[in-house]
Length: 174
Image (tube, rainbow, N blue to C red):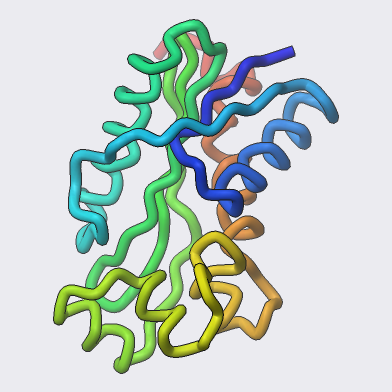
């Protein structure tokens, strides 16, 4: 059984990590522990590069907190121009896998609030009346009327980030 450390305590992110690991390695193949670590970037990253850096730094911090783990996983949500997305970073002791989630265009009213310094989750909670929305379906869930959720979109990107750990082509020499 793999010991997986999620660099988050967000239930939506942990659910996506659990589902991806179960899908890739088999049901019950891992034990996941969430740890609260800093990203080292803004609470609301506003560029692709800042978002990716935040995920990588969460991994680094999670590795320091739980060095005995088999895998460390970070999900950092961010915004670039008018699109929201997230970076997935997965590491074990030998390698790293990364993937960016699907992105979606944010409504102008939300972008205006973000430019004024608000965080996406807080603003979406205010606009929709869904308390603590980022621990539930997130902006994705609200804007797709529940057809997608943070977990479902992150799940797909996590499976892609796990490719280097499972496919033999990643082990071949260049």
